[in-house]
Image (cartoon, rainbow, N blue to C red; front, side):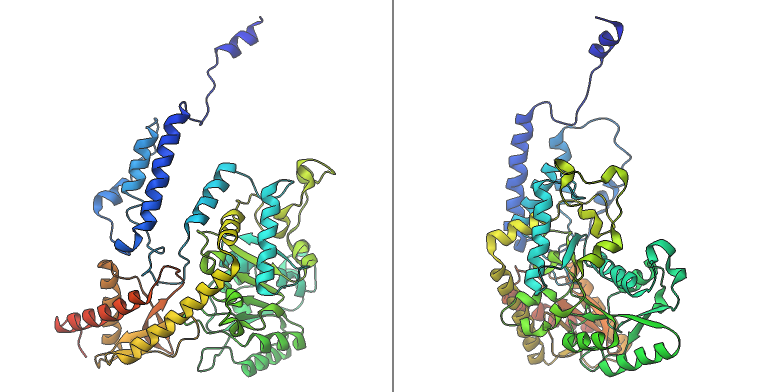
Length: 495
């Protein structure tokens, strides 16, 4: 044996695999048992609670340099992370607009991580499942089979995908080669004054700037004013701009208002604009039998952004961008370096999914969506959407029946804005309702957010939770009234 071989024999090679698989298997069973208990007992725990100092201090520990037993590592996770969640899986979490996850989807995430496939593309089963889930999203929204799409991290990225294709398609030049500075006439994008902040970020990231996004006034129902939009397009053309895209809301984040999508599609067609629908709040209402009429016209969009981690209740994170013109979609993002060329057979003979977005490395997001849809069927998810919308209607009725509560407006879908009103002026009223919101959170009763509607401050309840029951809404109203009276009696606010 030569010296080189002798040296190799002396090297101790390492791995991250366990030395004893039996120990890991036993701990894994315990983790799964704890996970089942965690969800089964969810309703009995506080929605949210503040972390004590020792938990916060735990996350300031320095980089670990030596090993620790896996069981001890799990104990740390259980004691800290699992004990102080954001709370969005809880049935009384109604802050912002988030999905509530599901156990089957969590198993899907686990299996996806175990398999560890990179979904940049290639000839393997995970890639086919990724494409299948995109096809199912197209089917749910009434998009043609010839359209394309991609799974992304969430709604913000899904919107950026659609708006990037819109920019490149309407620029009149090869933006990828020459850049936005070469566009002859500055592009203009249009959306209501209620659009999500991610659209501003998109304009900035696309090199167009915030001023390229023109916010159009809304009507009393907070839907985009079609007449004002048409006038703005005419004004911009006369001023030397190039109108490029109109963004329709299939549910605004503030109140759930849905723009007249059919009217927007017609206007966009007449004016030669790209029609993009931000459907992260409500596009999936298209599968809800009692309410699908509310998003009629979503299927006429050139591109749609939607969030399976909201009303399909997939664990975070997974969004989806759909684009009607598959060639324009691929043309916007595809790059083929020599190390990613396709082959007629073998691993590189599959489709390169990274050609439809910004990520070359892509996680296996599809499995958690696929497993839950297979287990429950899309019709059940549609009924759950109807259930949430009916629950908001029920809550609005409770609010209207309570003299000390005030409703901002009749809800459109699953978001309701209201406040406790004992006869206070605006600033004192805001302080009172903010205190109610904070005490609800701190006491672990419910998680609400707040917002501004028609210039006024309101508490906001967004029900995107398959665990919520009407009893939870009864409790919310009782507790808001109790806290309102308690805070007022304490003299914390004054008129």
